[in-house]
Image (cartoon, rainbow, N blue to C red; front, side, top):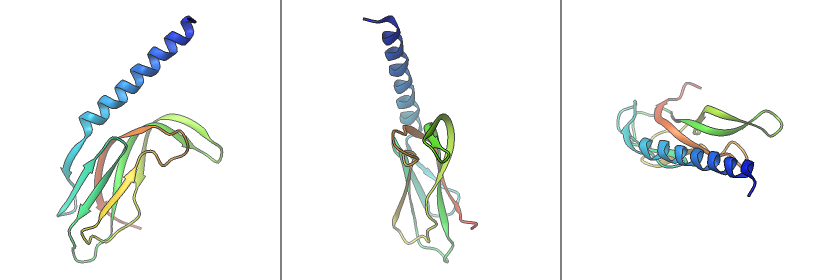
Length: 120
């Protein structure tokens, strides 16, 4: 077998194992900044559930790391980026935001997730 192909396969396997380890270590539930919100991360994104309040608008902020697409053409890079959910008023519903919505072939994992007040 070609030594270059074997080396490339080993690098790709090590990279995927590293991304999986980051996702597993970072998974779980955490309290968010606004009162009465619970944030849960999974392998490719996060979700938040907030109890109703006085009508404040919130947004779910997810920090991601991995392959991303940028620019008007499918230009890909590797690094950190943030994903925001649509603004929402807490009413007990579950809001989600994913790291994989940046384009075709994007593979990324969440490194942090929290709810913040929407500032328009």
